[in-house]
Structures are given as C-alpha cells and as structure tokens.
Amino acid sequence: MTTAIIITICLLILAAYIFDITSSKTKIPSVILLLLMGWGVRQLSMSTGLFIPNLTPVLPILGTIGLILIVLEGSLELQLNGSKLGSVKESFMVALLPMVVLAIGTTAAFVYWGGTSFKDTLLNVLPLCVISSAIAIPSVKNLPNTQKEFVIYESSLSDILGVVFFNFVAFNETFGFSSLTQFVGQLLAIILISFIATGALSYLLSKIDHHIKFAPIILLIILIYNISKIYHLPALIFILIFGLFLGNLDEIKRFGWIEKLKPNVLDREVAKFKEIVVEATFVIRVLFFLLFGYLMETAEILNADTFVWAIGIVAGIFIIRAAVLKIYRIPLSPLVFVAPRGLITILLFLSIPATQMIPLINKSLIIQIIILTALIMMAGLMLNKKEEK
Image (cartoon, rainbow, N blue to C red; front, side, top):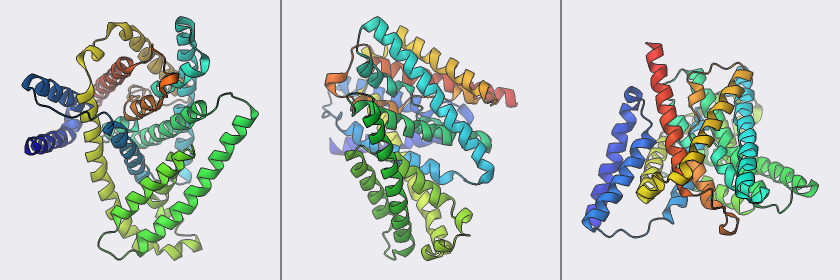
C-alpha cells in the first residue's frame, strides 16, 4: 500500500508539472486541474475500497508553508526602485479598496438575511475578500512584465491585508481606541522584527560555508513566521520585507553598511536560494491543492443552497474590481479577471473558531467561489490571448 501511495503521489506531481509547462498555451489555471485530479483520486479510492487515513489536519500545515513560500517567491522577483513607487501605490489601493467594500457589502447582506451578529459575519466574510497569490502569481507569468509585477504586488498585499484584518477582527471583542492602539503596536513590532530578522538571515546566507545552507534559512523563516503568529503579529509583512531585501540588493549596494553582508557573495547565494524556493513552492502548492481537491465532496460542489450566494459574491468581486481599476485608470483587460480565491481563503476559513462560524458561509460556498473565480480568470486570460493575436 505504501508503494502504491508513493507511486500515485509521484505521478500526480509529474502531471501537475506538465500542467504548469502547458499552462502558457492552454491558459487553464493549474488549480482547476489539480482540484479535479484530487477529486478524481477520491472517487477512485472510494470505488476501489482503498483505505486512506484522514488527511484533513495536514491541509493547514501545507497551506501555511505554501503561503510563506509563495509570498517569498513573489517578493524575490520584484524590483523596488523609485520608478516602481507608483505601481506599488496603485496595487496597494486595488488590493485594499475592493476588500473593504466587498467585506462591508457582503457582511451587511448576510446580517440582513441571516440575522447573525456583525462581528461574526465579518470574520466569516473576510476570507472571501482576499485574492489568492497562490493562484494569481503562477497564472500571470506569461503576461507583460508591468502587468505581472502589478499582480504580484497586489495579490501579495491582498494576502497580507487579509490576514491583518482577519486577525484584528478575530482577536478583538470590541472595536475601539484600545484595540486600534494594540493593532498599531503589532504592526510596528513586526516591522522591527522584520528588519532585525532580515539582517540576521542575510548575514547567515552570506556566511554559512556548510554544503547545507538553504534548508536552515527556510526553516528559520517558517519558524519566525509561526512564532510571530502566536503573538498575533502580521507575519507575512516579514516575509515580504525579507524577499524584497534579497531581491533588490543591487538597489541598496550604495549604502555603506551593506558591505558587511558581502553583497557580491550574497548576490550569488540569493540566485541559488531563489531556485530552491521556486522548486519548493511548486511542490507544496501542488500537494495543497491536490489534497484540498481530494477532501472535496461532490455534494459540496453541487450544493444548490449556496450556489446563488456564490454567484452573487463572485459578481460583486468583479464589479467592484472593475470600478476600482477604472478609478485608477488601469487597463481592465486582462487584470480585471485576475481575482482568484484559493489558498489564503481556505486557510482563513479553517482558522475561524467553531463558536464564531455561521451556517450561511460553509465549505460548499468556499469551494464554489474558488472554482468560479478561477474559471473566470481562465476565460479572461484566454480572451486576452485572442486579442493579442
């Protein structure tokens, strides 16, 4: 049985690799194919009577590691200089405004129709308002550099803002001056920790002579992230700062203190580090979506009770997104279609305490919104490909 499971996993990951290679031609988001493969494996195991242990507890672990690596991979690719500030500001606002408007609007609708409390409803709604960098970033790798950079910034910032707002709502009984003060304190704390940790990790990266050097760095990044989460700090900010620092060494070489890190040596090590991160991100992302697809049930996908809500929320996502892009005079096609929900949505949904969950927002609704937004993104990218021809 062990051999059969290992063979199956290897074949599935190799199939995912083929999907990744051909995605530039097909424009089909790999997440759709991965979810289908995972779901297919479930149907096969049920029909053959093959016993597979409960893998549900593994999902948040893979998701957390995947989120760290995805944001790190994206931030390592970004070039940060004076000419990019305008794009950063625009991507920040496009990440923030739709999230706030959609969260308030959807929460109001659920409170009105479901009679639930505002705080609990907002907590349940927030996971639906966050763009998934795990799906968005790999899907736009064949777009022009300016559009690709915009999506990387926007989706990474959306992940960070989503986690920050989610934690703020989850860990505060009331919203007032004291909770706001605590929130600002947490932001300042994680920024300070990020600069200290970034300096320390960069120093280690340039100094370690042992043949194993990248695994300890990645483990330390995951460790710092999770320790920060224990104290309810927005730890994704640390990942973003660390990635931006390593990816922009050429921009900061003019500062005298950078010489202590031996930037020429560090540059070479960062290039190798990027390769390791890209490979690890691919494997973890594939395993996460395969497992999530395996855990999906057919009844959840076809649940008619949640489908109307899913259609309404997805319509709201793209209408609000189009309006905000229009305000900032950003060309709509194909960026208006790139607003997938995915890994971060699932992680935040699984983080909602059982006592604060509301019946209207359940696994069926989450699955339907993830699939619908991915399909719309696929259609938009295909349409854009035809227009380019």
